[in-house]
Length: 84
Image (cartoon, rainbow, N blue to C red; front, top):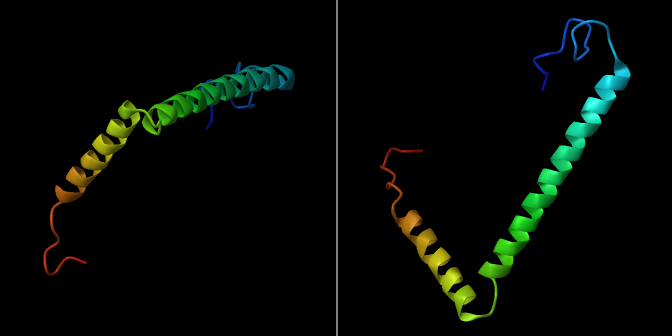
């Protein structure tokens, strides 16, 4: 993805290329993306623990998920005879 503020010389300011500033900006973006990824990983672990726990709530969650999946599968339109 090309940042919209990048000038004709490739710098983030549009004036003169500043590789150090560009590298620092990139490093900040990478850190932010890593933090977001870690947050999402934690959210998935929490949801997974809740969904697959052995207590009655976890069992009910698995059953509800299976029921919702079966409902969405049955709601899909049937294919006509000439459909590929």
